[in-house]
Length: 138
Image (cartoon, rainbow, N blue to C red; front, side, top):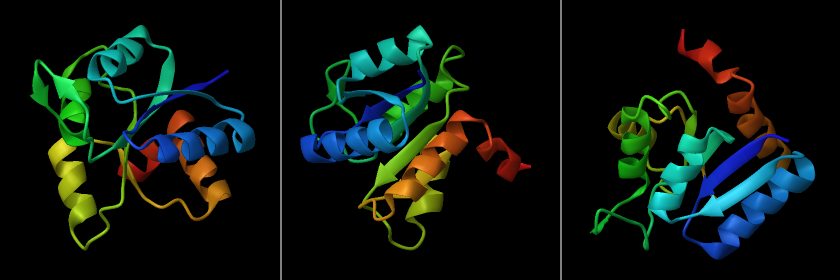
C-alpha cells in the first residue's frame, strides 16, 4: 500500500486529511509534526509523497523552531529524500504566496486549505505519487 506522510500541527486537519486519503484514496497515512520523525520516515523510503503544512507551531530541529518551508529545504538538500515530492498545504492563499513558498522551499506542489473537494484532493495527491506532476514542469 502506498504511504503518504502528512506533516501537520493541527490534529483536526491531520485527522480529516488522513481519513480522506485512506478512505477515498486507499492510501496508508503517517502523520507527525516531529521533525526527527519526518526525516526518519522520509529517509526510510517508505513514503511516496509528503504533504507539508507551511505553518507549524510545535516543530523543532536542532533545538530551533522550524516551519514547513525549512523542513522542505532539509528534505530537498538530502540526496536520499531529494526526489520525494513535497506538496505544501497551507491556508496562505494571498496573491504571490504560492510562488513565494514554492521558491523558498523547493517544494513540488501547493494545495490550499481548507480542502473543499475531497475527490480533487485525492486525485492531486495521487498525481504526485504517480509522477504525473513532473510532466507539468517541462
